[in-house]
Each structure stands twice: as C-alpha cells, then as structure tokens.
Image 1 (cartoon, one colour):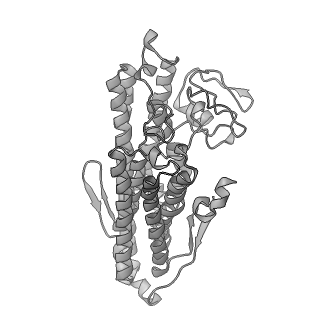
Image 2 (cartoon, helix red, strand yellow):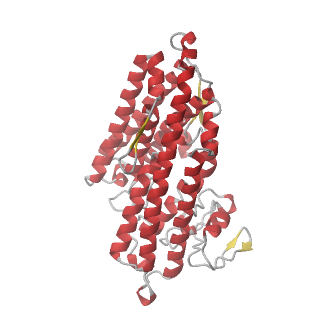
Image 3 (cartoon, rainbow, N blue to C red):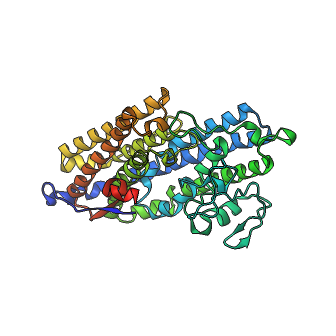
Length: 419
C-alpha cells in the first residue's frame, strides 16, 4: 500500500520542547492504560458473543440467532475503538489480520450464491470447507473432518497466500451469522435462516452440524486472540513495554496510529474506495450492514487517544494526562484546532450513523448517483483528511521523528483504482 510521507514542520521555539519531556511518560502511561481497557472490553464482549453462539448451536431458534447477532454488534463497539493502536505498534499490526481482516471470499467457508465462484485470483473462492471435509489446498488434501481453531488458523487463514482467504475473526463470524448480503445497493443485510443451524430434518442448506462447528471454532479463536492481546497491554505485557521504553518513540507511535487510521485506512480504503467503486462488497461490515457503526467507533477511538479518555463498555471512564495537554503547552491554538477537527469528524460520522439507523442503509449511500449518500460519506472522508493535516502539524510542533502515515490509491492516485 502506498504511504503518505510527512515532513516535520516546526512551530514555535524548539527550545520549549525539552520542558515537555517529563510529561511524555505520563501521556504514554495513559495511552497504554486505555489500550489495556479497550482490549479488555473487546475480550469481555467477545465472551458474551461466545455464550450466545454456544446457545445458538445447542438450541437453534430465530431468537437464538438474533441474540448472537446482537452480541456480535455489541462486540464491535470496543474493538473498533482499538484500531487506533494499529500501524505504530508492530505487535498489533502482526496480529490484527487474524481478527479483523476484510474483505473476504466467503465461499471459502460456506455456501454462496451461484454467481460467486472460483476466480483467476483465488481458486479457493468457492471451496466451501463446511461442505467439504477433505479439501485440496495448495495441491494437498487436507483433513477437515473436524473443524477446529487450529484448522482455521493454521491451514485456512490466507490459504495459498491469498489475503482474501479470510477464515478467522469478526468477519468470518459475521458471515456465518448473517450470510451473504445479496441486496446490492438496495437496503437489506444478509438473510441467513436460523435453520442453517437446525438439527436433523429441519436443517437447511446441509451440513448444519459442521456450520455450527465452524462458528464455534471461529468464536473460540476470537476470544483467545483477544485475551492474548489484552495481556500484551497489561502490566508486564510486551506491547506496553514497547511503547514505554522510549518516550520520543512512544509519542511517534501515538501519532502514527492516529494519522494512518484517519487517512489511508478509514478515509481511503474503508470509505472513499467503496464510494468510487459504488461497491457494497467494499463495506467493512458488509454482511450485517453494520459499517456505519464501525466507521463511527473508529472515529471515537482516534479522539480517545488524543484526549486521553476512554469510556468503557460498562460506563467506567479511563483518563489521564493526554497528548492534547502536551500540544496545548507548546501551541494552544493548534490543540484547539485538533480538538475541533476531531469533533467535526465524529459528528460527520455520527450523521452517517443517524441516517443509517433511520433507514438510509449504507449500501444505498454507496449507489451510483445517490447524491445524498455521497454527501454523507464524503463528509466523513473530508473530516478525516482534514484532521490528518492537523496531525501533520502536531508532528512538527512536538518535534518528533519524521514518520509516515498509511496512504490509499483512492486518495493519492484515484486513476489507479480503475486500472
């Protein structure tokens, strides 16, 4: 992926910067404490999802499926607020693809509409491991008689080196709960029936026992992955230690995460690209039509880190010395600008959320010629781009090391998107 190079532009007197050195440790402590809390909430809500999935498999019903869907959506709220810890933290970057990779070729996992199938890019796009206990992968027969976390993680995830062979994480679970969304740019999410998990003759679309086995394996793996990441940010954890070991590098990590998520990842890959292609397959939560919530909570997560304040899933508040306070010591006007832009972006993302919850589906917003939808999405995109410009200025104001933010062809080289 292309990167947007940022060159530090200095504001004010550099001599004032050393006076902030004593504050950096406190700011970094707030940052790692928020990370631990957010990943802890992610693990806790995933465990509630696990209970709902177990209940669905044990006693399938319309109510059990709806409860599992609701638990999945609840689990997304804290997790999306952790995405700001990506990009600058190698431990998170190396791990993140296991839990939140998208888009995925869902035919690897289960049955799909007949219009979806093998492609030149991915010969496994219609593998359907749920229906195929002896699949051939990379020229070798694989024993998938029992669908286990180890099979998903060790054999199916990114099988044959193809990134869209996503077998684990939130979006694999999302597909298994909702099924494909075949509504295109009309309103409507996936419509998987609860009987896809039913017992005996009530089973629809065959292999209900194996479908339940896959859903349980994916959910159990998600829980163990989130437990592991929570531990990395706890006292003595490797991710925590990596941030705290060098104060200047730690501040760079914070800014890298904020800028990369704002610009290339969210404004570009998750929002602008889908709008350019008018393609609901580019939605982050495309099976559930929950994309508007994912966008919103990503924006909240960026603001959390700058303000040094996180509201947990139980309402508890984690707060402490913040990057905002550090910037304000050097350049109060720049801090006010950053806070204003963060709020403007969150409000633009909230506008999308409000519209979607009122019945204007994100799918519809992506449709070619839908001016109202384009205006809503571009409001978020423009807010994210605008706040990234102020993050650039903060890089200069704090005199931190030169750094790079993630870029996106959709923003940096739009013509390449259609090549």
